Image (tube, rainbow, N blue to C red; front, side, top):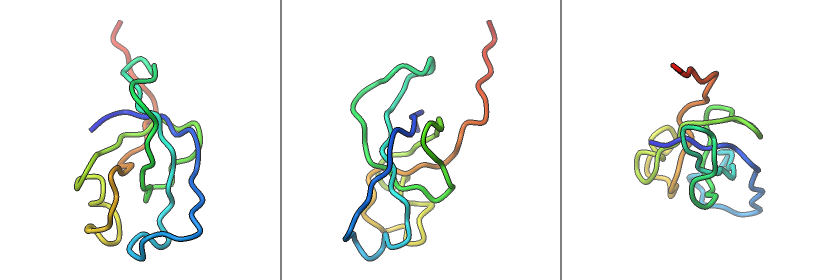
Amino acid sequence: MYLAKVIGTVVATQKDASLKGVKLLVIQPVDSSGKANGSPVVASDTIGAGAGDTVFCAKSKDGAMPLPDPNAPSDAGIIGIVDYAYSKS
């Protein structure tokens, strides 16, 4: 599981039938301070995240578990939206 920031949306004229109706978003993995950490990826979204949201993501099979078809070909999935960050400084 990792943190990421939603930086865009994907418009697909054709996609696998098991992904029909599933929103695809471009996410930028970030570290705990919000700094970019790696390359952007496309993630499936079933929870209603939007541009600018910080989200929890899962890779591989775990990322596809919230989808209507858990066997759908999804390499990453958004599994939670961060409401606020608490820092014990």
